[in-house]
Structure formats: C-alpha cells, structure tokens
Length: 328
Image 1 (spheres, rainbow, N blue to C red):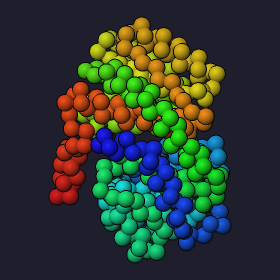
Image 2: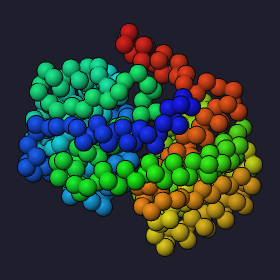
Image 3: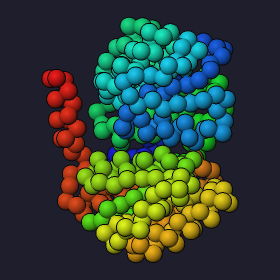
Image 4: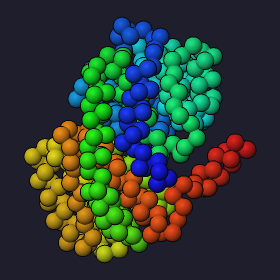
C-alpha cells in the first residue's frame, strides 16, 4: 500500500493521459437535466469529490447515488456515470441497470468485471482503468475520469483537467511537509476516538479521512461539517475528554463566517479535550488544496496502521460480507 500512496502524484498524470485518449459516442450536444454518479466506497469517494469541487461550474445538479436504487427523476435526459473499480459492485450494477431501463445516457468507469460487460452488451461508453489494486488506492484514476466525462458532456468547463494536473507539482514539491503532517496526524489519532471536521464544501476530505482510517488503520472514527456541526454535534462535546481527538482540515478558501465558526469550534472543543489538531491547506486553488489534504490523510492512515500493528491492505471483513451476500 505504501507504494500505491507514494504514486498518487504520478497517478494523476497517468489518469489524465487515459482521459485525453478516451473517446465517447454519446451525444455531446444533448441537453441533460441532471447527472447521477453511482459508486460505493473507494469508487464513490471520487464522485463525492468531483461533485463538490466543481459545484460552482456545474450547469445542472450532480448527485452521488450510493444505493441499489436510483432517484425517481432519472430519465432519458439524465447522464448516469457508473463508477466501480472492480466492475462487480452489486449496488452500482443494480443502479446502472435501473438507469438503462429508464433510457438514461450511461458512461462507466471500471477496470473490468460485469460493468464493462454490461457496457459492451448495450453499446455504452466506458473507460477502462488499470486493474489489480485496492479501489481506495485508485482515487486519482476514478476522479480524473469523472472530471473528463463531465467536461466532454459540457457540464463543467472544458479545461477542467488542467486544474487537477497542477496538483501533481504541488504534491511533489510539498512531499516532506506532507509526510511530516501525516506523522503528526497518525500520532494524534493513536489510541484515541477521532472525529474529522471540514467545511461543508469539502466534506469529501473528511469522508476520505474517515474511510482511510477505517480501512487502512482498522480504527473507528466519524466526521462532520461546518457549519452544520455547530447546530448539534458541538453540544455533544460536553461529554468529551482526552480519549477523544478532533482534527480540523482548515481551507484557505473558507468564507469569513466559516473561518470564525472554525476558530470558535476549536476553542469550544479544546475545552473538552487537549487533543485538537488543525491541518492547514496549501495550494493555489481549492482543487490543489484538496489533493494536498488527501495525500496527508492517505499517508497518515498507513502510519497509523503501523502504530496499530495492522495490515493496511487487509479487508477480510468486507470479503466475508460479500461472500455471504453472494451465498444468500
């Protein structure tokens, strides 16, 4: 897993190369009313990331769907993107099949499996990713393809790939500070119940942190967003103590009011636990900053796995669940 995390900057460049060579047969002049991205786990986080990062560009709603069913509004004017690294994620397959029955335009992103076969059978466009790795380690590949599909469809700017291409240079230039921050984060979370906070526009960063600590570090945690947590969870910290650790991902691009809310939240939570860590973003855009946060998170999850004496790759409980479902 260490090698895969280390390759994140290179994966961005490799993913862009795949995207620029991809061709699509769907009607690019079609007027879509909405977009639904279907994906779970390590594939779904790419959908959450893209839908939030490009919300200010999107000319129509982009919805992340993480279930067997699809929204009732899906019809022939919907662009549905199925994202499943393995190609065998049963929730995504069921949702894409439902979209097919409703006459939606479908494009899929996968390394193979039943999803690619479905596309071939029904003459849908698909992008094939390099296979054989844990889905959570392939975020760059899935996210970049989603950006490219939305760009080609005219839903976001046609130069959207250029914005994420710059992330590679930032990550390489900041590698030492990224690993230093990751080591601090891992030590901060070791043997503590952790909770991650981010601005609501960057919820995917907090979700990524939760997922990576769950899967790689084999440790429970949760997340919430500002300002919503100020209306509920903040009160729950009355029961906090030093067994808990809070982490704030602090964006340079926060609104003035959310900057103040973050400062006050840190002050309040700091009165209930001494374990509060602020991680400040770097980069010239919110996209660069997001990749900076993600690289810190991914490294931290591996460092914490070592502290916990756990195998970062192993996910036997998920394999057991899938096998049990297949036999049911």
